[in-house]
Image 1 (cartoon, rainbow, N blue to C red):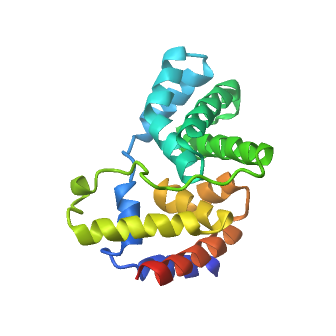
Image 2: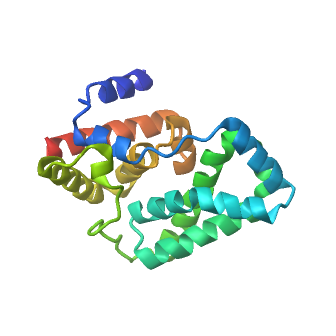
Length: 207
């Protein structure tokens, strides 16, 4: 099964490997399901304070998501705002706190896709001088690790769009396979296949 193949691929990654470290660096803060359920109830009730709280929790994640999909800073800011506006207008579709993460990323992913359709000839922005979490806070205070992460980020930027998207969604944005596949608009099996191809390509370049 493809799922087993994906798990094996990930298990083979040494904890010190830059791909694994990239996932650790981008690990979001955990929030209780109860708190998210409460937030969703308030959102569905039209609570503007809850809308502000949603932006406060997810703004940085969605902005980084846009940057990693190849949008420049200004466009990423605009698309992030558009994503939250769309989320507010379609808040009735949201079921509970458990679905919030995937639901919001699906909206953001669609906003990004629409942008690229309108700007077919525009080249994706590079990840040069890209804002990433402080490596020292994660214990990566050596020049070697920093160089590996920079090499990895550059390698991710060179991946074909569909393969790049799998790394961004699963490793950088920390979405589950199901959430990431839903965001990409493809089946789980297709997503896993692309993810394995992306990982194989990256390992050849960063090892």
